[in-house]
Amino acid sequence: MLFRLALSQSSLRLSSCFLIFFSRSCSVWVFFSTLSSSLLMRSSASSSLLLMLSIEFFMAVMSFFISSWFLFISSWFFFISSWFLHILLNWSSIFFIHLMTITLNSFSDRLLASIASISFTSFSDDACFSLIFGLVLCFTMISLLKVFGYVVLSLLR
Image 1 (cartoon, rainbow, N blue to C red):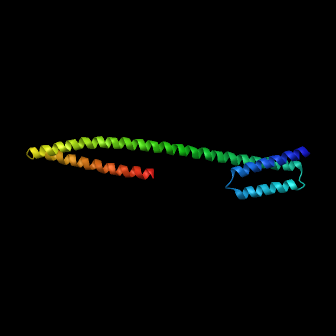
Image 2: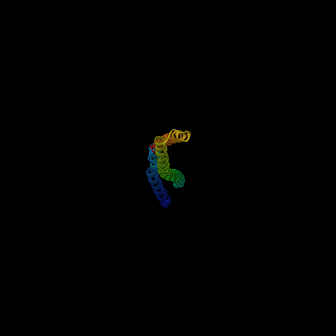
Image 3: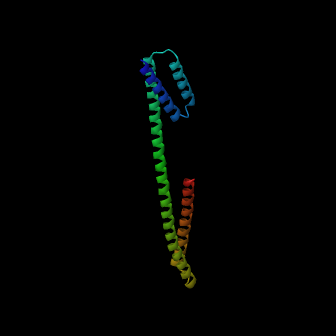
C-alpha cells in the first residue's frame, strides 16, 4: 500500500510537471490542479483514490499535450505553405517583369521604327495606325506593370 501511495504521488508530480511545462496559458488551471493534488496527498485519502485521480490527471495532461502538438504541427504546415507561396509569388513576379521588359523592348523598337517611318515618309494611314497602335500597347503594358507591381507589393507586406 505504501508503494501504491508513492507511485501515485510520483505520477501526480510527473503529470504536474508536464502540465506546467506545456500549458503556460492555462496558469489558473495549473495552479488549482497542483493545489488540489497536493491537498489530496496531505489528506488521509486512500491510495486507490489517489491512483485513480493521478491517472485521470495524467490522461488530461497527455490529451492537452497531444492537442497542443497538433496545433504546433498545423501552424508549422501553414508556415511552410505560406513560405512556398511567398517563393512562388517572387518567382512569378520576376518572370512577369522579365516578360514585360521583353515585350516593352519589342514594342519600343516598333514604336521607334514607326516614328522614323513617319518622319522620313509622308503621313500615310499605315504609319499613323502603327504609331497609335504602338502607343496604346505601350501605355497598356506600362499600366499593367504598375498594377501588377502594386499587387505584388501589397501581397508581400
